[in-house]
Length: 245
Image (cartoon, rainbow, N blue to C red; front, side, top):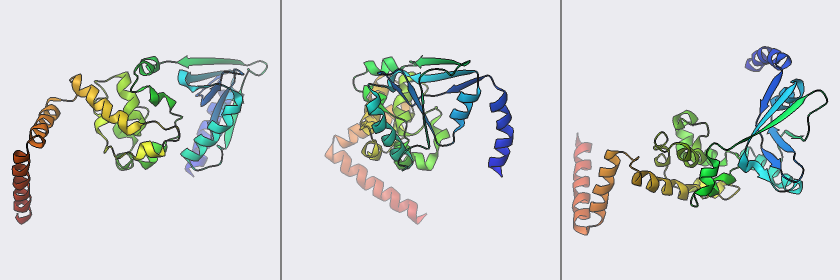
């Protein structure tokens, strides 16, 4: 019923709009074409019905040759949904007669991330979502709690590059269990980068006063065996007292 209602509402939009905007999953340097992957076919319908097709792609989406495309297409689908291949993998190389095709290369902080040696590996992401599916924090909290367009573990290492102050909390919203790095098909060291971002943010003063004080207290406690034992005894006493209450 919901699908039928959406179809009735959206079909008129597809048929009457003159311009369509799509993303780009992969762009091939050898041929100048790009590939758009969807399971619904909306990108195909929009791009073919509109007079103007505007494709927006991040500068990291380039791959060298067409022969590499098959590897990435299989990697993307299997890591994202377990499919052998995405339902629609459409190749665009030139506009159809009477149409226009415009490609917009988006930097949006990617050059800055490329210049960060410890974090440039994050630009290998193919947006499969495998790290989100396995992350215990993301599964509990959902995407909206990350307050950024790219949620989950990968978003938590990409967003601080754009604005360290606004997204300072995201690298700390992780258990550092390493599950995201284990399932990543392109071998991004996500949990290591989360830990490194924490260090960068604390040095930049973005961690917050309370977090800084708590870390100093933990450092003091863990650096002294006597203090550590005393803190352990106090913690056990407090826990036992709370249970009696």
